[in-house]
Image (cartoon, rainbow, N blue to C red):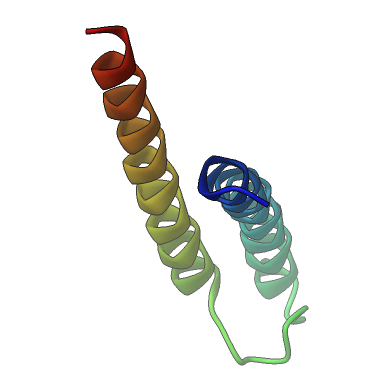
Length: 75
């Protein structure tokens, strides 16, 4: 498995993980409004959104690295 393939796989995993955390944060927020919890108080909805944003920052960094490598190959 090459480095580019590993970075691409990690990027996709982080991207889908961030959206899963976004959905979980929304469900947690609705459940908290009703007086329940989904993640048993371990994380709040806002903390889940923060983790999702951090994952998306890593995805952006990996995508920028791939773009830079492609531009170096072309020139």
